[in-house]
Image (cartoon, rainbow, N blue to C red; front, side, top):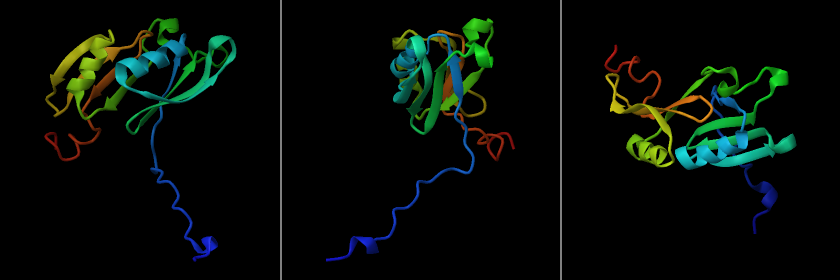
Length: 153
């Protein structure tokens, strides 16, 4: 029988050299987390509750995409677009099947602001506005694919 101390150590998780994880602030973060699951298919990985029904921190995933959703923090000047009266961010997410994703968002009552379409830069996508004003584009767009040797070179 082999000695377990002779076993090779487990490989470390692969971490990309650079990646981005958007942090989005909302007046009603718990409701937005529920809606992101229903409308967009995100999975709740972690939710750290705050005081009075707020969310101190959360992590939601959709494939390799991770977003963090938190309750507004006026003390840190972190507010929802609904609180400032303007769009403060837009998020673009790659999905392999934009048609199915679009159907899910529509079924959940999402406000579609740009309908599902094929773009001149090779993506199939659509754009939606969430209940507090952030815009989301879901589709097959991959940054750099077009201008790094695609049709735009």
